Amino acid sequence: MPVVSRLRAFAALPVLLVAVLLTSLFITTGPASAMTRQQRITYGYNIVRAQQGDAYAYGAAGPNRFDCSGLVYYSFRRAGFGHIPRTSSSQARYANHISRSQMRRGDLVFFYGSRGVYHVGVYAGWRNGHRTIIHAPRPGQRVHLERIWTSHWFGGTLRGI
Image 1 (cartoon, rainbow, N blue to C red):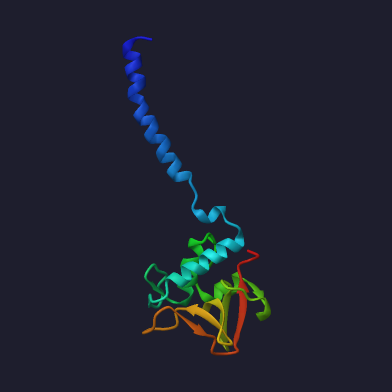
Image 2: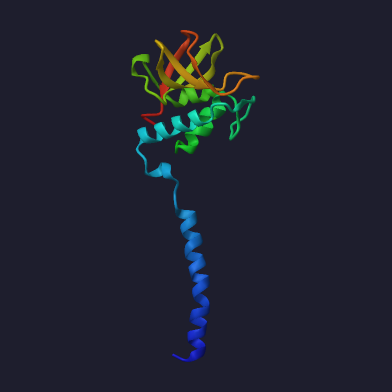
């Protein structure tokens, strides 16, 4: 092989190496893709927990300000549930409804009134004899853990989605 041909081959090597590295960056999927559905729910729940203390802002979906459905949207999309809707009423239609006895940490709690679903929180289990959620409640408050204050709610899960 002539010297000029060898030099061209070596000159192309860095370009080829950069192309391979860039391609691998774009085809690599996030950690959520390798998880089971339950692991993704647990991951989403942990993201929700990490947002405690963040401010409430109507219409906000993170990363540092949330409304109730924005918190669910942000956390569970990051956990690999890419089709979860943005609003609490749409999330209620998207999730599989489950009985209260089937609730697990990371499931969703939908609050409803005469006009339908108006609020969503993420189930955090039992504390001091009461079911609790982590949620972004309203203006002037921050994302926090709170006991469920009403009987007008139903459970939803992403386990079967």
